[in-house]
Length: 76
Image (cartoon, rainbow, N blue to C red; front, side):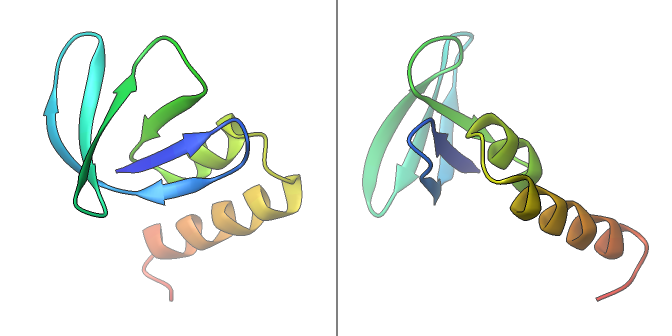
């Protein structure tokens, strides 16, 4: 999973467990609690969704959208 923050950082993590209100992820050997409804951090499975939520530059969002479309169609 990806953890995106409103300040623009995106980190990769592994989902440890999930409840109705939060995710617990392992990031660099530390457990990180991410709320599903509050806060400046959110967890995502999709990079494009994470970039949009973090309000990344549209050019970067478009680039990852193109990469994901190419991957889905069997391209490189």
